[in-house]
Length: 346
Image 1 (cartoon, rainbow, N blue to C red):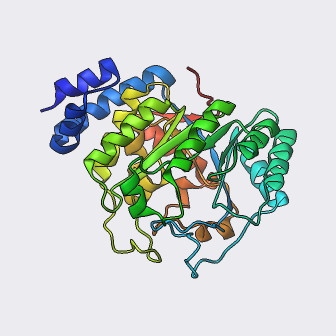
Image 2: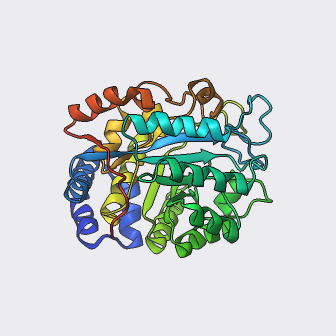
Image 3: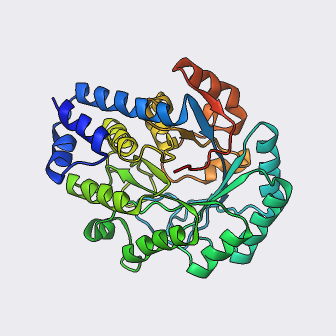
């Protein structure tokens, strides 16, 4: 058993490389239960039993990139493309605000068809109509000036998963013209500007090794992001990795708990990928230390088009319409929805 190592992680918020690798390779079901219990205790001590909700608006599924794992990659000709206009975005926010959302997350591919000034307009209009709400963006790699413009317009948070911090592994997942150095630099720029910054990884991507996970942990430890998003790799039928097995559910929960113990105050979502891999995935993530869920506010007729991976959970408690069901599920494990903005507090 690795209980002493896990307790050391909780007490010191870090481990040496050898002990991290032991944790990845030797953990048992009993160890997993133990670390999840400790992570849950840390989350509850910092946030109580309230789970923050974020209203997800999938702005566009056009993307200039060709990441090998992603269902909306440029080369996938089977995608029915769409982009939301300002009126549609504001309608999503109106619907969300009326049922209690106080954070909106605009997510999308890197779409040249939506200009930076359009995003600035969206941000300003949301802020004008819903001044008490936070705005999170997840729109990929941009220039420092563009990030600054988004921030000045009123955006509060920015999510940019680095996916892997190992250059060789990054090359397995992305075309040669994409740059890991640029992605990591974007994260440092976002923090410098003042965004509450989020990054994260996928668990079980092709050719991922435990040494890569260790490198990711060290990168996140150095960056100290306010938000950490991670979940299992899930394959999509129209990508080069269509037949690669999905990531490990238990390893995903282990890493979620590790991140909670290392970053007690971080905002960590129980992701849609967890809920897509297992019917109880959302609850399992919360019971592993997560404190955020992101129901979908996107127009119902567009949701299936934003398909990053197969069998994505997009209805039921994953949808904004399913808040009552979500609250019932949370109450079944001793939690409840928190309607606060849920800003990061150091």
